[in-house]
Length: 379
Image (cartoon, rainbow, N blue to C red; front, side):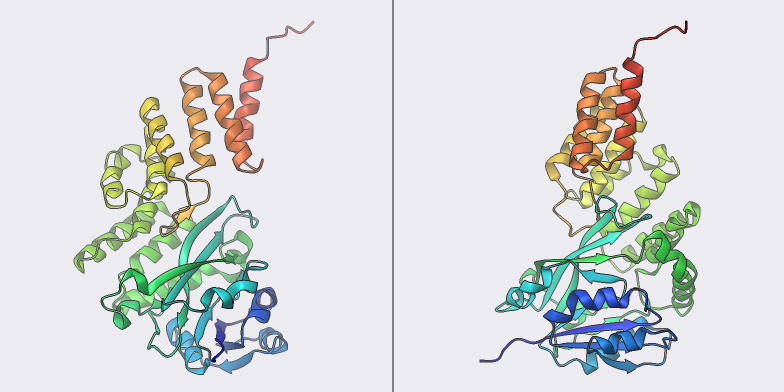
């Protein structure tokens, strides 16, 4: 009986600082490691070979998709698993990887991608999403788009049924958007150069403007971010496709960051009509209601966030959007209504769910404690 085989396929360039961590996490669970190097000048290649990887050189031509597809040509496994050098498989998750693949009817499988942001890798400061990282080899799957490449799923499975895609309980940790990594890699300049080139070349990629908007958002150039996210929404509509949910998440995150409350309300309800199960949109709505001083309505919305939870990560979901973040804002609503005891209870609950690492909730509790202290006159 044929034993299932699994190939790890990666592309790299100057990744000596992180590639060892990545390969250490996965080496024991795959049958081969295929690494495509696009021009490393550091110790990346030697490190990859020390892990038993087959390393192939690919002259950089400006297309991440082309480099990945070159790796697919070399892979021999029944299944392909792809990772980036700034990622790692969560500890122990690889032990059951082949077992989870065996007997699956699907052709593509998603895993739980944990995208860390901020100064350090904190589970409470992360974006979660199911991301397709495993697919059957030799079915014609390839990557498309020169940057932020994705699989050509609709080309291979034009009438894709839900049964063709599934998910498995495997976690990938992504460190590439931590502050230090972004700075060391000059990600904004690198990504923006590639994105603007693709735009100039009129690449048939309706995601381009979204990714440009995301880059501007990360560097707090909100006017440009808002311009491009709206262009992205229009582009999807022009090809008669409902704009993906993360476009609306970004749009309302920008409006919140700029304090454009009246620009966000009540338009966010239209986005919620499209994606009623997207907890992040409901959370944004609650914050807008709170900022308008409509505390009763805000409380109802935050309660709905808690009922939705945050386990549905088909949408890009910020950790806490269905748990400690709405609890914190429920505390703020009750504090604004003059009910400090209720407020303290919600702040405490938020802090507990965040494992004690929620500075805003802790500061709010301290502020209530200070407020409740009797006035002592100096002698």
